[in-house]
Length: 438
Image (cartoon, rainbow, N blue to C red; front, side, top):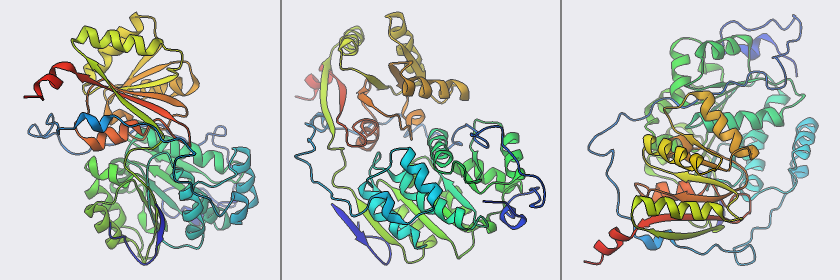
């Protein structure tokens, strides 16, 4: 289903002193031009701040999920509902350098969310974007807002994301899209030195891309003044709510000017998100590009296992297949992530762990090595894997059944992206199946 709704929520360059008003310090516009240590400049890697405090009554409770929901044949491109975009990127009338950068990155035909959201956002209207992961949301909000910044670099942009990994990926896209445009950004995320982030803010940036907890910390320290920001993006708003960031988001949004452009993107549209939109958006246009919860391009099936040893042997057999490609394996516990990674390495596989207790550079290495092909397998917890966007993941394995179906949807959304077909396998205990018959 592809719809646009107007009027509210749906029922379901050079620098100058004024452009740095949101930050302490700043550079004089009359001074020399500055280089930020290479093309990656103000790119700080790091991670999300802490979310909800652990609740022992809820922490390990699992919802019952009918195993039939783990089985679904991927729909081929010829079988799926086809969307015919109205625009190619050359139609948007954006700044010529931005257009050239997009062309160099291979952006020609707009995806459905880009096709519908970009023209609206270019007019300055607020947008609610409802779209599944992997549909091109990042470009859908970056392109119109970068175009706004390059037209007038007095504007300032804030982008909030749930995790350090997603914030890193957004800034990488920002840097790619703004090459040669003298627009600067900083990642304000936990898990990375705050002192470096403060130095970048004081030097002067046009865009802050961060997690709610760290951005709030910097506001409270007086390093960011939100009254100077006139554009804001919430990316994966539903994930930020799940992680307990709703109060931080409301705090940050409440400090911004009444007159601003807001772009909220989410895979789902819960009552809490509706409330955020009602309180902080002005006459938004809603773009909905979502036909189902589970990606149609993911071929889903179960693998029946007995003992833990049998489970590992089944996994070994799957990973030896020629078509395994890049593999992302999910486990519930951090120590189990480490244990499985060690077991696979001992069997000769190029496998790495990814979880919240790892140091920042170790997490970066895991994502980088799987992206570049230096590693074939990453074993991760759900928290560490939120927001990861690695091209060409061919297989997702649920080594442990997730706590709820929503988490399952998020996990398998790491594959079958950008029009490609992926595979998801869920290990199901034969003993659990036997007990369920009685």
